[in-house]
Amino acid sequence: MRPYVITAALVGAETTREQTPYLPISAEEIGEEAARCREAGAAMVHIHVREPDGRPSQDSELFRAAVREIRKRSDILVQTSTGGAVGMDVDERCGPLRLTGADRPDMATLTTGSVNFGDEVFSNPRPLVREIARRLRALGIRPEIECFDAGMVEEAEALAREGLVDLPAHYDFVLGVPGALGASERALDFLMASLPSGSTFTVAGVGRHQLPMAALAASKGGHGRVGLEDNIYLSKGVLAKGSWELVAEAARRARAAGRDIASPAEARKLLRLS
Ligand code: KMH
Ligand code: ZN
Image (tube, rainbow, N blue to C red; front, top):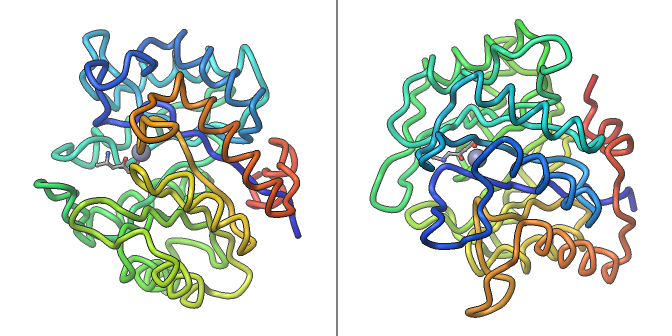
């Protein structure tokens, strides 16, 4: 089977320092954590950024600083969020897409529908999704299609018909968000069966589902996303000392499922990044 790509979701928009002291906030902390994750087996980081007080941000200069600190220390691929935090508008969400030249992200997320997100709504009306897809296309940045629910897979096909994304694509199935599609093998099988042929996929299980879903994805030929954005525990009641510890455990489980771990160069090829 092809090598297993581990994405480390280091920061997110929701996890707080009150929940875990291991959350990176400054650009330097993000860079150091990315290097530890690379060492542990991750080929890519998925990043958000924070204001110095910890508030979520999509500010392009904060992203620039983080990307530089990451690339100073390792060759890990950088995927920036265009999801941001609940309530942000399209221009704010696209802050990291203003980075060009050496700071340009290798990939960026594109969520293709709205979804309940705990007690809130992660709002992605079709015009907003199309606007982000258009900007990504104009910049030549390959999207990772973020699917929090099953209809979002089909919506990517509608975008392809409109010439806004290329298929086959790379998908991230985010499973287990309260209010959205649950983290089950049945759900994953359905999503996999719904993919256009030749597509690749990652599974990001939320909370206690994270490591089991990363292992399940490994056994089915997919890839895995782990990290403090989606889960802060290594095991019940035991905080992960950083996303790197979750990466190391996902790598161990993937190897046990017979998968080699992809380097950034291998991931670049597998995910068809430029
Ligand atoms: N923070 C969530 C509301 C993404 O990064 O593209 C959205 C999110 C998705 O994290
Ligand atoms: Zn994210």
